[in-house]
Image (cartoon, rainbow, N blue to C red; front, side):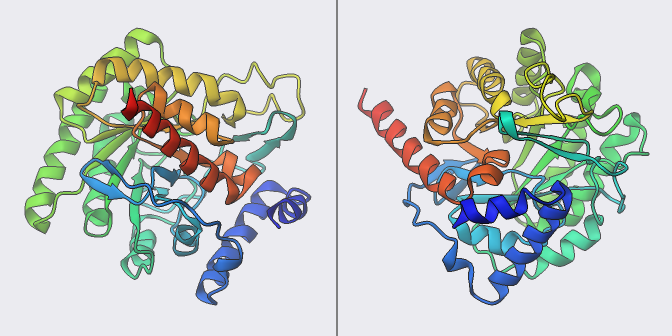
Length: 345
């Protein structure tokens, strides 16, 4: 069924197809029709950041920026769903067109630019959630907030979403907001992590509830810088790290249609690099900070590969667009097999 649906969607402009899909999923959930799309998924619980996931395969942020369809998406078998990225104020994002399929490489290039309806809108959506699973909320800064004041935006978003999130992700790695990736390095990272942890402690006391915070990083980071990021995550007791966001390296698709578009590349071309980053992080982090692996997961083997590299759980996005709900089941089963093999050694 999904292969037929995908053919129709891929005949449309990518962003139009995206919005139509979210509208359809939202309507189908409200009408009780999502069972037609759901695949039976093995119950394979895993502990992550103090949370118990029904399985270790989640939906990455970016697909449902405004939490408009997460109730329906959550019925498809995901172990957790992450919405956002959301910013303090609504913003339109970058000019159209800004989303491109690179079908020959099973990839997507986007330069969306944190287009979203603002944190207050998202809060109203998640405040009345029907989805009973684990919900993550991904937060970022507005495009016109100076980098030196970025922590203000992250903390403001944290305060508003904290009562409704099971975990919060600080996105410091999108290539489509000027200066954002600078927050991953040196004193900029230290200042941001310090502010985030202080705000988390304040909100935990205020809400009588501890909500873990993860940081999402880019794949375009050299080995020494990855080690420094890992050390900072440990120093500030960050609860988790998501590796990785999209890449600005488009050399693998440069000769394909749309392959030279500006923006971040996701999909199969990212598979190897994201796994390498996970492995490098794991060497430094050990068991101190769990890793959520993202990038190029298109079948069970690529999901299990992230677990072998050191991830505790994984997220899918582009692979889900190309493969549909079947990918969730394949990934869960492959990871379960990998975990059994690992525990028997």
